[in-house]
Length: 548
Image (tube, rainbow, N blue to C red; front, side):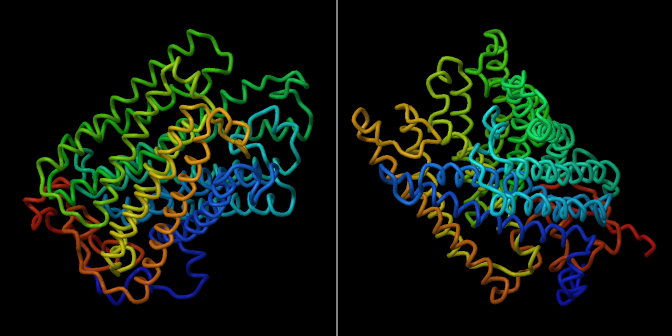
C-alpha cells in the first residue's frame, strides 16, 4: 500500500531526476510526453494533406510540398508514434507492476532506449527541416529513394537509430516476463495485456534488425554507389520491397498486438467478467506474432513475384485471420456473459472492436489476388491501413491511457468530456476514412496531389473528398479535446480513488499512484487469476516479506 502524498512522481524533484531516471514508470511518462508531441506534429501534417485534397485543384500545397508533407506525416506517425507508443508508454508503466516486479530487468538499458528513440526522432525532424525535404513516401521505395536528395540519408539513419530503441525495449520485456514474475504468477495467470506485450517484444527483437540492415544498405548505396537496389547500378528494387515488408508487416503487429492486450483488459474489467477463452486469447497473441513473419509478400502481388508465391502469401493472409477472429469472438462473449459498464475506456474498447473489425475484414479482401490487382495503390488501401493502424492501434492506446490514467497521475478526468470526445473521434474517423473505401473502389489512386483529371469520369470524387476532409476536422477536434481535459485533470482534476474501475490486476492493489521507484515494498504472492471478479476482495494472497 502507498501514501498518496508520496509517490513516484514526487519522490525526486528536478528535470535531471527525470532525464536520469531508471524508474520504468517515469520512463513510461517520458515516452508519453514524446509520443504526444509527435502525434500532434503528425496530426497537423495530416490536416494539411486532407485540406489540400478537400477540393480539386491546388489549394494550400504544391505538388512537391504535398509529397514532402505526406512523407513526413507517414514517417512520424509510423516510426515515432504507432510503433513505440504502447510498448514505450503503457508497456513500460504497467507490465512490471502487473507481474509483481520492482522494475524491468535492465533499467539502464530502458533509459537508453528512450534516448535512442529521441535521437532518432530529432535526426528525422532536423534532417527534414535543415538538410532537405524528402518526398519518397514513408516506405522509401527504391529506385526513387536511391536517387533522391541526401536528406533521405537522415531519415534512413533516424529509422536505424530508433530501431535500436525498439530492440532494447523488446529485450527488456522478454527477460522481465521470464525472470521477474512474482511468486505464484504462473503463465496462465498473466494478465492478457502482459501476454500481448510479451508477444510484441518477440517481434520487436526478431524483426527490427531487418529494417536496420535495409536502411544501412540503402545508406551505403547512396553514399558509395554500390549496386544493391538501384537498377542503374545493377541492383534490384524488388529486393528492397522484400526487405522492407519482411520487417514492416511484422511491424503491423508491433502496433496492433499491444492494443489487443489493452482491449482484453478493458473487456474483462468493464464487463465484470473473467475474459472468455483466456488461454485462446493469450496463445492467439503468440500465433499472430509468428504468422506475421510469413505474410509480407501480400504487399507485392503486383511487383512481379511468381504466381505460386502470390497464392501462398494469399493463403497465409487468410490464415492469420483465425487467431484474430478468436480474439474478437471471445471479447464479444465476455460482454455477453458479463455486465457491461459504459465508462470512457470501455467506449474506446467498443470503438476498437467496430473499427478494427472493418480494418481486418478489408485486409482479407485485399489479400484476395484478383481483388488486390484492382484495389492496389488506391484509397481503399489507405482506408484499410488507417482502420487498422488508427482505428486499432491508436484507439487502443487512447482507451488504455484513459484506463490507467488514474494510476499514472492519481487524478480523474471529466467523464462527460471523455464521452463527448470519444463520440467526436468516432464520427470524425469514420467520415474521414470510410468514404475512402468508396474512392478506392472507384479507382482513385493514393498519393495524388490533385484529382481534377478524374472528375469528368467520376464527379463524385469531389463530394467524397470533401466529406473525408470535414471528417478529419471533426476527428481533430475530438483529439484536441482529449488533450485539453487530460492536461486540465493533471492540475484541477479530482483525486482518484485507489481502484476507480474495480479492476483485479496487480497494479490496482496500491491505494494511489505507485509509491516509489520499487513498486512493492513486499513481494506479492499471487494466488488467483487476473480476472476473478467474484473473488475481487481476495484476488491476491498474503504478502511475502523480503529484506529491503
